[in-house]
Length: 253
Ligand code: URA
Ligand code: SF4
Image 1 (cartoon, protein in one colour):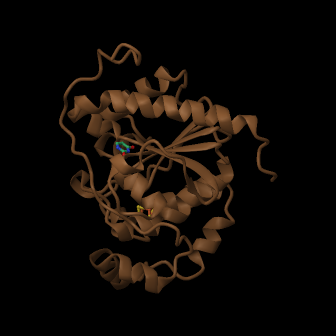
Image 2 (cartoon, rainbow, N blue to C red):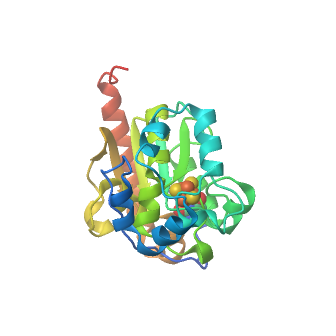
Image 3 (cartoon, rainbow, N blue to C red):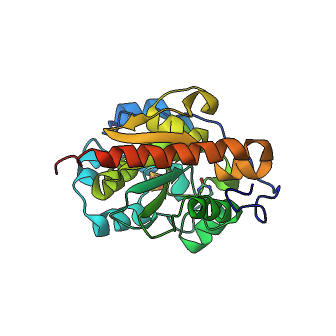
């Protein structure tokens, strides 16, 4: 893909596209809602007494960056805490206009504590470079779940739901102009809809008032080379969308 300057790295690798869904929209975590969302996760969480209480969402909503990071690294609100080496909070410019949201940490991310540092991450960096962006500079990168799902399985809807207050608070603190959801899990979790990725592309959605567009997950692109050109279309669409948004005045604080 010449336009993206990605030819050296767009090679087929192992990795799996993910499918899954989560309820989004309901961010304040009521215990009943969580119990409904994730049977195995929550029954074991109940056993350990780590079910989020009704105040958890509100507490997280009031946190500053330092509190949020330390809360996530100590979090036991879903079973994913059990196998993690560390929570992978997010990385980048805390005042970024762009927020990219992936699914969840993999092995290398769990090891290093930073999102998208493995093969998919290299591709993400190249995707960013193709639209003149760089990790850490006007871009923030986060995941739907902060802890690595064992064996890189797709996060359960209940896990995504339990973790959502962290992402919601990150978004509130960053106040990005545009969110790019990478892949079906991120898109479905954030938008609360169960539909195909193809049908979510090419439109401007909204997550709690922030414009959001959807594209393929880089790990999926590594396996499905044929969709590279579509992801390039999505990135161009994202750039145009952001430019158009910048013609408008920013929302007041
Ligand atoms: N895949 C993701 O969705 N997130 C990461 O951080 C790494 C791989
Ligand atoms: Fe907590 Fe999120 Fe980790 Fe689950 S994935 S333990 S909700 S930080």
